[in-house]
Image (spheres, rainbow, N blue to C red):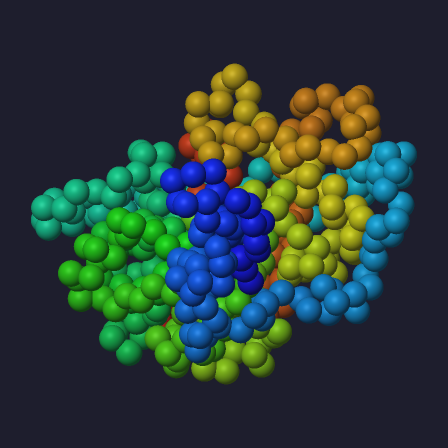
Amino acid sequence: EPHAMSGASRGDGGDGGATRAWCAACKTMVRAPLRAHEMKCPVLVRAAQARARAYYSKDINVDVDVVSGAGGEGARDDGARDEGVREAKARAAAAALTAASRSRDSHGGDLLVDVPANESLGVVARECAQNAAERRAREEELSAPTQSRHDAQFAGIVSAMRLYGLVRSGADVRASDKPLYVEFGAGRGYLSHFLSDAYGDVDLALVERRAYRHKAERSLRRRTGFIERLTIDIKDLNLNAVDAVASRDVVAMAKHLCGEATDLALRACFGRGPKARTNFRVRGVAFATCCHHRCAWNTYVNRKYVISLGIGRDEFEYLTKISSWATLATNADAETAGEHASGAVHFDASHAFDDVTDEEKLKLGRLAKRILDEGRARWCQSQGLSAKLEAFVPRTTSPENVILLARDDAVDERVGVP
């Protein structure tokens, strides 16, 4: 929880020499005593408001057994941190990754081959973008203030969802079967806005821990669909306690849900298994993943899968770092890599990969990402859903171009989705 900490100091003038203190929560110097500021600190006030909400449950989507040390799979020896040991662990992770490349995905595909796109994606994406443009023109509404490459990604995500049966046009949907779309890591809500532009008024819940100005709801609220914003960290979100979700079919979606946020969102949807879904049904999932170097052992949903590949807790730490090699921008794609062209994550095993070429690093990085996403797809299958990975845009549009798609075929049969 955010909290204020005092670093008291004597003022140097202008305030009568009053003692000042540092608030670690809002990162400002304030007039002492600090307790008076804590009552009105905007960060602390928002945190208190979040804790007071009915759907707040601290760390509900984090694996408590692992955090507390009870989950001993691949336990790490934190005492052995000299450089030689670190380099040995880094090499072990690379060796395990290379060995894992000989395994197959859940559909029998080669893990070293790029995830394919649906053959019809281009056609549907153009149709989707055209629908969005026409609606904006009818309503004389300016498009969301995003770059064209973001619009292309929105179109790709929504089109992939449509082709997988997670989105249908308004004429095809009975009111009783209308799903609630929950956007995780929503930011200002532009993915939800694009979905509404392209396929009519939809019911939306937007999950975002930060407070934003200029949110998409400003124009969405003028439409007929339901919309609610949940300002909360995904790790603390108890979806079962959200009134808007009760008794609904839910489609979870996200554009570039960074690192462990994808795993937290999956647990928010499914809890500890199918029995945990007591008052809503997950019709489907569409998460465009990214920033795999930010994945963490204690939140990753499918540790059993990576352990089966010889990747324990120690190797996982370096597996996530290796994944950053997948988005190292070359001269050819540096301009399009955008926010994901941040370079490799710093290794604390400085000489472990001196003999690895850039081409080999790129291959290992992509394989690391593929394994992490494959584990997530298999985890969704273990929850009773069909699941697969697809490319939703070309890599030239975004190097983070893979989307995790999952759906409950039983729900689809009930509502008549082919």
